[in-house]
Image (cartoon, rainbow, N blue to C red; front, top):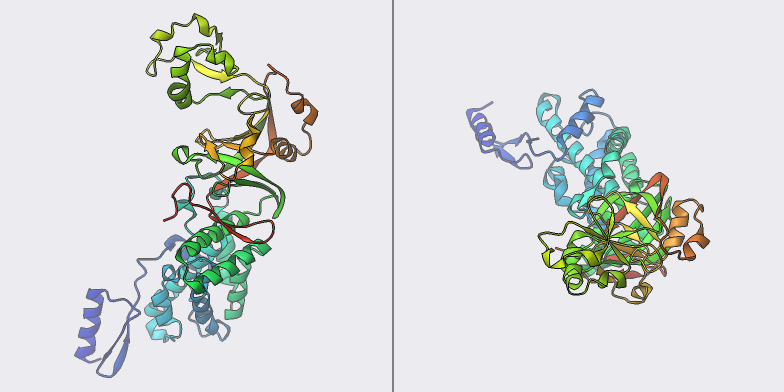
Amino acid sequence: MSKKIIVALVFLWVAKISFSQKVVVSGYQIPIVPSTEKLIYPLLAAKFYQQNNQQLFWFTADTGSATLPQSLKTAIDSCINIGLDKEKYHYNEIVAASAAKFALEDSTTAMNNDKIFTDAAIALCKDIYQGKNISSWINYDEVSCKYTDADNEYLLKNIAAAKSGNALTQFILLLEPAEKVYTLLKQELKTQLQKKATLPIKQLTATLNYFRWIHHFKFDQCIVVNIASATLRYYQKDSIKLQMKVVVGKPSTKTPRFAAYCNQVILYPYWNVPTSIALNELLPKIKRHPAVIDDMNMQLVDGNGKVINHYAVNWKAISRNYFPYRLRQSTGCDNSLGVIKFNVTDPYSVYLHDTNNKTAFLSGYRYYSHGCIRVEEPIELGNLLLSNRLDINFLKACYKEQKPIPIDLLTPVPVIVIYSLAEIDKADKIRYYKDVYSLLK
């Protein structure tokens, strides 16, 4: 090899020029060895090669695998149609190397290119299967972690099993949901991409990724609340069994977005007034007129759980900085939580519940709560969660001073609270919603 070639190779190594570039020196085309330092999923890529005896996968002498690189490139090229960005998947490197053939003596370049393709395939398949950047749209997620290992094993196994370009293409297609709603959302995105309509594209991109994330779990049962549309859907498998309106948090007291579990239904619940509401909203009124506690069917409870005579309290000595009590609303149909509450395992003390203010569901703008989620058809939802074991007549009787009755679910049911600004309605029409919380960036 001439000195010019050696000097060129040393220069390119020092400058860390991307392997997608090529240089011609004295008539020789020099391949640049790609860096694998910027792998998206280095541990999964390492596991892929460990499971496959450290062998090349994308660039082998096998006739069937010759079409693999081009098939991956084609999938990446079209990923914009499902709300993904091709630049995330090492696109420039994929384009540069997808048609390359590496000689045995160029094994380092071949293996590094192979790892880039594997990493791109893993990242693409994860985003198609699980949805992209879900953590940026969800404040708290205790569900996904239970599926991570199984998801990763499923993807690695099936990528490795794709021994031809056609097999890889078929696997990638199978990662997408088969539901009609998802197909309609994709069609709408394609239309908006052609129009170059920026806002609808952003809305649909988030919705498609939410949809893939939720449906890849294949839950037996699931509650999905969409804050933006102020609606709730109860799923059994992939079928909607119940759909209703909800009231969610005001823009100043937003309902958080989370994935948790409903583990308990409480009949005739107390409403334990949140401290912020008690101190900021109710205490000033109570100090002026202690009878407000009676008017609101509430009780004053001390630290030991004992109900205190609120007329015997020296309210002049009570302030926001000194309030050794809590307020609790008695049970019954006039309770703010109605006659049924659905406990949820999120860390925000946010739950689903009935309400004594049914007129709120008549409004098209249902952003009134302090963060909790009021449901339009609580008895129907409770009956489904409890496998038709709910005593409906008992609840409709509206007993006063009935002690709360907690009922644990045999199997906790996932509750997913999202903020999706585009949906397909019951008539299979696209609906766009106002960004009430100003979250879309």
